[in-house]
Image (cartoon, rainbow, N blue to C red; front, side):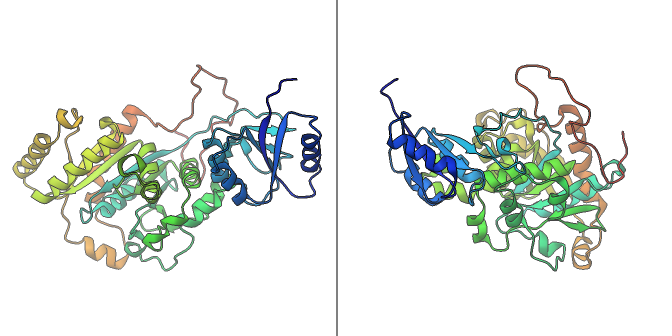
Length: 407
């Protein structure tokens, strides 16, 4: 037997038979393992950051606090996560676990996911209005009936106010918390949204206070975003454009603060970047585009939008020319699309106040371009094997619901 010994952390119910037995084997040197028994997930995290390398975490399937973030924190240090005596009601591999004992490994599934459309921009540019208009226009397509959700992912979210939502829960906090330890089914995800009947889409309420970002854990939010894409054909996300992280600022806290925006924009099929049709608005739009390009959003996925655009074709052309002049190859944004012009509507405020459908022209401006681009490039969210074609079992790609057309 090799002289090398493995350093393994253990976390389980104190009366778990395997827990005591492995500790006994380690003490008697029957196995080359230094087994360190932990009493809580917090102790596991403390030991992982203590500077000593660890080989694995053996954790009982019934442990309270075993969630995505504990798994991610363990794997980040290079240690494997092995669940012993796994409960059958949880999808452990989807949670990020490396292996199960004694259950055999399960094959990763290939699952349909809907489109993710992020709408972002500087403050006051009308990002929320554009997102609402796009969601309403998508929902107006009969084939999308019941399959469009608008998500408020901004730190200072205002969609609850713009929809006159009388409730404050559930929202994105509850959605992320529900995904910390398990994958939710489509019906469970839908139960955490609000039906905006007049406009045809569902709504995910945002953070109740800007500082509540501290309750959103990275892996849990990523799983909740994936859950929305499994439940809806189109997810329209109103999201901040602030994507600074630890690499740019040296602060992990800033990266955690921006985790919603960074995750959403990284996974989006298209990113609509909104700016006002004004001198300052075009300047702010250019800044947002450069920032997204630096973050790594490909230029082919960016769609500039000029909100409150004038009706004059000549003035619109002037704004488009200014935008193309200010951004280009020097910013690694060569090939940026021409902007979409969303017209000014004076009756918009009345629609917000009365809670009725917003003017159709706002959504029609973006709807045609977005659907055309999606048809051209397809969704980025469908999981496919990197090793070539795989057989598809009947029903494994999901199914349409809510009386939707088969086409």
